[in-house]
Each structure stands twice: as C-alpha cells, then as structure tokens.
Image 1 (tube, rainbow, N blue to C red):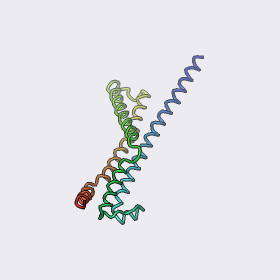
Image 2: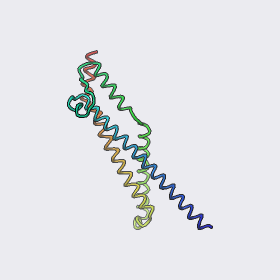
Image 3: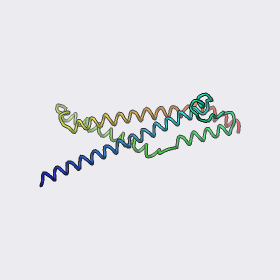
Image 4: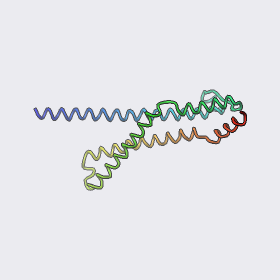
Length: 169
C-alpha cells in the first residue's frame, strides 16, 4: 500500500512539474511573439514616410509636408508604441530574467560546493538545462527589443518633423 502511495505521489508531482514547465515556456513563446509583432509594427511605421517602401509593404504613404500629416504621424507613432499587452509581456520577461539569475546563482553555489561531482547529480543537469534554455529566450528578447527601439528611435526624422511642426503652427 505504501509503494502505491509513493508511486502515485511521484507520478502526480511529475505531471504537475511538466505542466508548469509547459505553461512557463508557453508564456515565453507568447512574449516572443508579441516582441516580434512590435518589431513588425516598428518596421512598417518606418515605411510610412517612403513612397517606395510603403508601396512595397502595402501600407499608406504619408507625405510629411502638411501639419495635419505630421500630427497624424506623431500620434500614430505614440499609439503603436503603447499598443498591445505591454505590462503582461514585461512581467513575463522580467520574471524569466529573475528566474535565470536565480538558477545561475544556484548553479554557481552548487559548483563551488561540490565541484568534483557537480554533473553526477540529476538536479544539477536540470539546472544547467533550465539556465541554457532561459538564456536563449532572454537573448532573443534583448535582440528583438533593441531592434524595435532602434526602428522607433530614428531621432533625426522625429526631430526634423517636430521642428517643422513647431514652425508651421
């Protein structure tokens, strides 16, 4: 009777563990998809002011010669930067970062404590796999985020248009 209880407890804990890992990595995939969508919006936003790129991307073209078009362009830029699930995705990414830091600290402590037999324990292998997989996701988030901010932060165009807008008003 005790063997059945132990076996059922191990099976239930395994199912719960696999479910939680699947949910966590599903959330990371959702966050990555949101970051890719933000990058696409930033790319298409940059195509709005070029007739050739706008035609190629099938988006409307704004000629930034009128004050109304400049106001529309600036408001569209601010809308696109705020669009989508901002806070929830940021919470997912920050929790992944904190989890990665925690796993790295645990791995370092284990490595300093028992460096001769570090990889003999199965939980240390699991920690290393967690660390590698979370690091890959975080690197992807960093590259997507930097590309998005680089696309949105074309300061020369933005400053030129804002100066033009102030001069026309």
